[in-house]
Image (cartoon, rainbow, N blue to C red; front, side, top):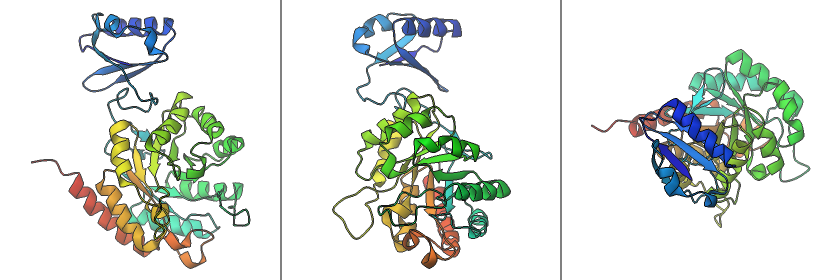
Length: 339
């Protein structure tokens, strides 16, 4: 349930209203927008009469919310959330960012790749230190050493680092390494123990959609993090599993628009994992940009044929530079103001 507060209401009246609701056993979420203030009631709202709330002087109107995700819901928070990823990089609310780098951190080539992607226009460095692989015999990543290399490259170039965390027991390690954005991969979207631990932090979390997850399930996973107090969540559409076998996954660009409609959280697209093939990555990136994504996550490797993982979907630095020029053209087209 949400209660929209009249513009004439004073801060004292609002504080008194919130205190009264909390005395009734509800949790509250107060969102102050440029045009209105919304108070979200979280709990068993069947126990309170909406007409009673509407009879109060400070309340404009009351609406019941049927969706189970409350804090991630745009009805509770009409304005777009803007997430500070560190180093002055903001995402959401009109701020568009590109995260680029290798699938796996492999060693000294990381810094060279990071320099290339930054020069091309990327604002965030992505790379995997811990790798969830389908086969237990495949390379699992460099672990803590990979985090150290990412931290050094990010610090030297002034770029926020995005890397995947797989285990709740590693949270302190990621904190110690000052990872700017913690990525939750598709396989861990419903690792609720991990999500609860990330909810205790205040570092941004990039939450990828599960391989077979519905949009509502994706948003409920975001709710797990936000329910713990961490509101710095960025959603990532990376393709879902369908009957199609010509691509690695099916890129659901619909989900970008739907997630923006349902939620105030930023939404980015991952065309690399969505398609699985270099030849399709740029087209999918342009589609995500045109669909209104707040950013992109793209894999870039200096020698894809020698990559430890997912070389088949990585762009070379030259291909990435060309892609960034085209992405910027699409951005200019879709952000033009109506005349």
